[in-house]
Length: 105
Figure 1 (cartoon, helix red, strand yellow):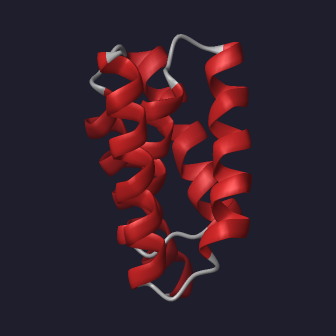
Figure 2 (cartoon, helix red, strand yellow):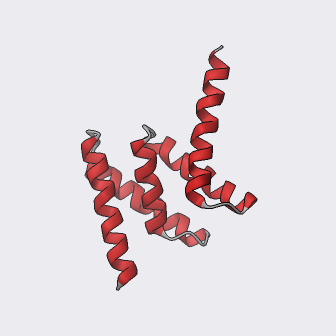
């Protein structure tokens, strides 16, 4: 019951973040929920954790496929380097920002 309550809470937080950013909440929630279930089916990461990372991605300005890619990369970093997943997510985002600045110059 507690895990279910946590998942509902994370889903609501993601919906609020999407709405605050003017995104199409219903369509994205269906897409993101399906994505989260797919990740959960192939990894040890729960779908509520994936939805939380998607919320973080949206708050960082990553949307849609970019948000999903960031989540996949963070999970990959966690697996490869055995680091906490939120830390790996932030590292992926920072690395992309640095790379894009370097690429522009």
